[in-house]
Length: 328
Image (cartoon, rainbow, N blue to C red; front, side):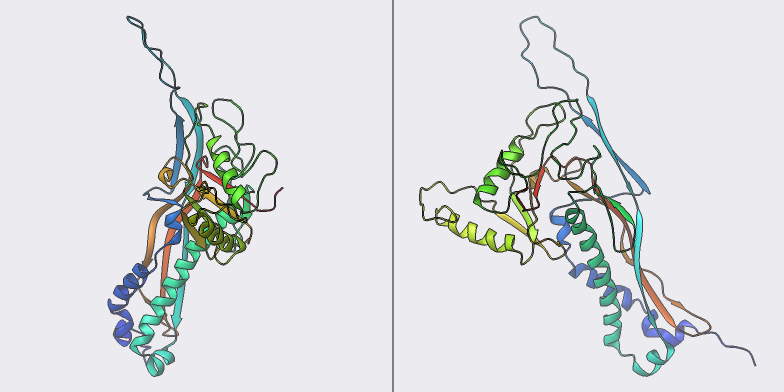
């Protein structure tokens, strides 16, 4: 007697394009928090090389009948983004399908897959900040991930190399005495002071104006941020009873991350400079997709998987400052 293979007709509901539409709908519900602090872009290349070029020096006054002065741009640092495939699959046995499957399970299949992909994206994004004071870390899949910028220094470092060979620059929150200040009103002032001292590759002022802070959701920093902002809104100096009308150092926007690990960590950046040149970069070559279904001929097991391709990193973190919150 001939063996009859499984066929798609036997799994009509699961093979239907309904599941594809549900997947797309479920993915649309997931709003990536990482898009608020990463610059997100797409590529068709397996390797994407970010090769920066520092601009010319500041313009000069030209006297009457004088020639304009010429300058040559400086080669900046490079960063290569290499695409990695990430995915998840689901299996349904023939018995479950024949005797336990209902339409609501169709929704659950797609929801579990979309939740899995969404959590992976947000985790990988937050881990770049969890490990931003080192140059590498090992992720949950056992892969070594770089958290070094184009200058080979950690994202937050007191010794970032400058492209023109000038004095190294610092983007760890520093008040002249302590680095990595714990989040308080004085640390907010120090963050602004730290960012204002950062120079561009030619040694000119960057003009960084911090307007967004990032911390762990439910952390002591999260709580203190709200307390500080409440005091500032009443023109009181946070932590005291002074009311001198000058308490205006607040960072108005807050992003809290569920996947940020350390209670004391906090970072701030200039959202107007979130672009292809500065800050964290997320590079998609394939956004989340649901692949065609498969049925195992021997077991008649139904399989479905979803995947995506991306890489993330940073070349130049001049528009960010960060603190481990331990005052060291």
